[in-house]
Image 1: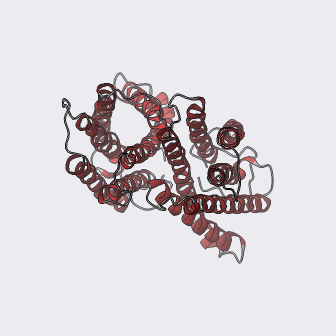
Image 2: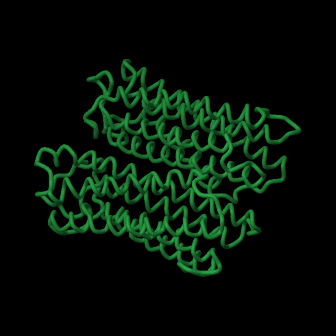
Image 3: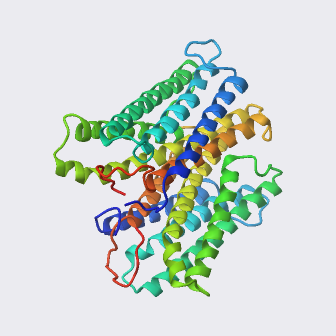
Length: 231
Length: 231
């Protein structure tokens, strides 16, 4: 059963459109407005710019796609599980690289680490995300737990996964607000195109996360009688 | 049924402790560190200080208490409904006064309005919260919808309510981060007691919101056979 009686189709379609919009917006911001992306550069801002791009496109958007696979793909359960696992691995790896970019920028620019709420929650999110992935891999993929353990674990896997994902979306908002506040303190006009762009990207991120959750709470697009759905 | 098979008791107890901790922390911050609260003052910061106190204690903590009444109170359904409704009314009114304090501070200090993500989402949250309250009042209290309408509305009332509440908790985090960033830009040390206090208050707020949601998803502390539980 699912909390929402409706099919996930419309929610998932909205999530796809918002995901594409969010990816385009963060690229426009980081490349057009903030000058581009680079891992090595004398202009250290270009190293920072990798951070929002990878966190949004990786952890949030690809992570969100991973979450909704079970409700959207017309495939058998084993195939969906592999896609779910691989997409989450990609999301996690891009997230770790994205966080490394933020540290590299801080260190090369002599900016303090770990003083902000965004960094505190961010480290929490990435650790919980990794624990969740490893637990899922061991119990549901290889070597795999007993039938009872899988069945008992699944609702908690879903619940904990949604909790970590919501925390990731919330922390993305903190990141957008923090960076924009720094830019405004350095002279960016508060009602400039760039400021609106960043806030709109954040709003698109909230809506994307909302539709991911709504998709999870809805009925699968194609019914799969062989899969056990915990919610 | 409920998503979580456990009784709500432990989750609700944790929420109560975190709620008290959050209320104490925000009062210590706004009164001890930031100089106190005032609606009229030449030191305009004292007007601002009303904002975090009323938003956290009102909208988030009392709002959270309102949400969990159905799972925690050993009372009949009609009594719980009135408590739920009255607590949400108090939360909403304190939220509106809290937002007014932020505007009053901005206006008397010549600070721009509505340029930040926190203000954008905040206005969205308070409007949605008010719509949700009015809809709940009309359908579930007075004059009351038909039995079918109530039953069909209830899962959406719960889902929409949790969505608005999560958005409120997320926006509280944005508020803590935004204010602390302003203070740090004005000279507050990044690793000072006050900075840690604000970040800890934000972490307590996240945990409070989490345990409120977990309480809602769990079994009632005392079973009430006459009430219909949508999740």
